[in-house]
Length: 337
Image 1 (tube, rainbow, N blue to C red):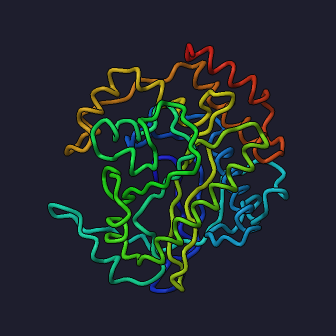
Image 2: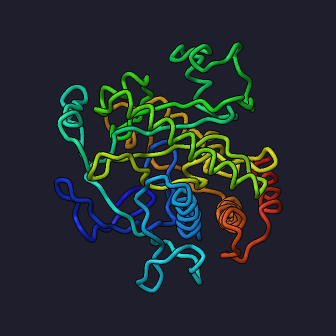
């Protein structure tokens, strides 16, 4: 079980053979790598499943390889347009999850030995803007990255729209994600230069697909993350979940409509300040303690946000909720923005 979705394996991946599995998208949520948070967001799981399925089907139309098989309804695997009621179950191909060994540091040598059928231990991030809350600002302040590396000529302000997307990369299988240079990413993953360049190219294509489809709903695709795997022929494929308000940072009329709403709420708490001090230390989650509960009106508004996003991105009214415009107005009032 993951912090926000469960994976049920129907056929184990073995050697060079891909497996089969289903993702069960839950109403749980997670922020700041903490794990499962105390509340459930009603309808979130079904919303994310349908949005992600919608985007995987757009990738299929463009010939971008991925692990998606379809959405499950009444034990049948269907396309989004065939679904009668929103489902929280997606069938996928699955690959082996190889783990770096850890003694003092992480040992990624297994990824240089294996050739196919495994999750690549990287998370690739695309950035179309630099919104408030973007990790870029902290990294610039700490000197972990320079404006030159970002292709900028001055220190950016929150909300900056980038002329061209910036691609970033981080670890995926460590206790705390850490940003990498592309040379470091190539070293730990076992990818060669050609494969790294193809990874970037696919990321930009997926970013474009998500951006074009969200723009139709008046939603701005600020940034997002992708995961990749090698199939049984060592061909790159997009895996996990894509194009949702959890994988992406979306905004509508300059108001965040992604998981950033929840992050913003928790950043105002003492719990978050403890978490930031302890993060990365041994048993840091335990030290941070239990997160505070969401306000009931915010919890309900976020539920409606996910549902309205699903309706407007897919163009199908899966949920009986108000328009995204009105939901965003309510969130803005609750958050005091």
